[in-house]
Length: 278
Image 1 (tube, rainbow, N blue to C red):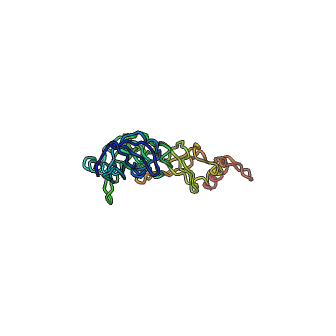
Image 2: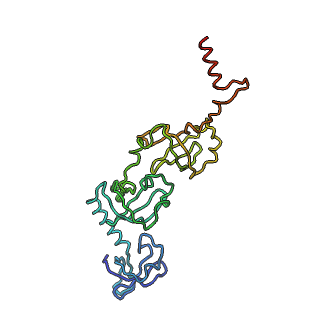
Image 3: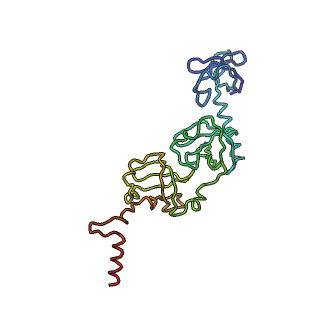
């Protein structure tokens, strides 16, 4: 249980050979780090180790670096809980990327999770679209709590930038019945998700296309296509926008079409007025 400094001399079967004060120790690969990917990257480097097995004759000397990392982690987490508070801004490094979010290692020695919904104001399908391992990021602390003896830290990248929630401007930027050009973000069986601005996406239901002259074009729409849409409804509390087809998309040819009887739209209107007078 004594911490000592050692130099990794070589990779061996199941772990590493470590030189400690003139003696050769063995460090199992599982005790070198939390995750070892490149064994050779540890060779010729000095680390602090904890002696876990010791023979006074100098044989069967076993050490662990991970045990020390665990002790340091517990100490760092305790200090973080005592000093950090929700809303604080930190600088960190993306340490790992998963489908559900990205883990960020903070300078204080602790690691937190940025959920995929907290990476940016715009919707993304995978964190790797905008983040990469080793990338420096600014994060805002949302919550830190101890659960079952483990510290859980929730972070946000999008709230650390200072731009603010774009939805706070949505009612003035996108008034009802106004027309805008958006980009198809995702296509579902029930409609198209159309991005109007960073962080602002609305749904254009498939049913809205039925009365449009362009209804056959729905099937050919794909992600990335530009599309003219109209703001039909805004549910501010739910952060949802319902879109429609702009009025000028509709087929207006019926207004000037001639019927089989020879009546045009204008002549039918005139006949109606005569009937009213009668």
